[in-house]
Image (tube, rainbow, N blue to C red; front, side):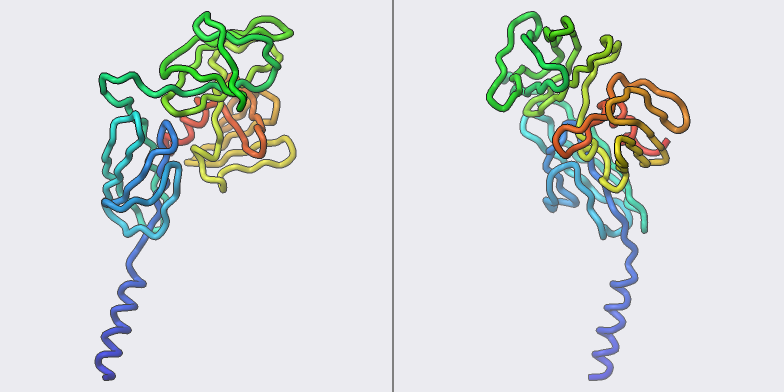
Length: 243
């Protein structure tokens, strides 16, 4: 009996000593179903803790997009970042539409590729997947943006009262690309520390400091409801990994 108990205790000690790490999975577009080594674990973006160190197979699927399998390596006591861009499904059927939501300056009229667009009850405009010219008539004049729409995904566009920015003003929820612990908001000051980068900005101001240098991403940090939105180009840079 004592020998059996000793064997069980040794097994418990061995299991407790197995090194583990974490995996942070993000995709573009978000909302992809994620499998780890054949087991479904949820939808992107997500953080998985307690994974055994070593190689793992990550499966990604989303309706309207090609499924994908990738290999990742999990390191003990560290968080491994897996950031993947999915490709639209190569089928003869037309891709599913997405939508556009406009924030900021009130719009008197909206055109997509020169055609008047209707705004739905939830405030969004349905648009086919692909690149479009979005033209909005505002009290300050007409504003035009080039916008990319993804299938079954909402693209948020913020219109600023300043002179039209030279870059597409597409923003996205910061928490869809970064862990919440990387985002710090004190009053109107926004600080992002992630993957060796430090980004400092201010709500409503388009000037940023990225790794100690001035940068222009075309749009200011914006609160839409309780969520922080940042320029998609900036989020993509941060989520691509360590500098």
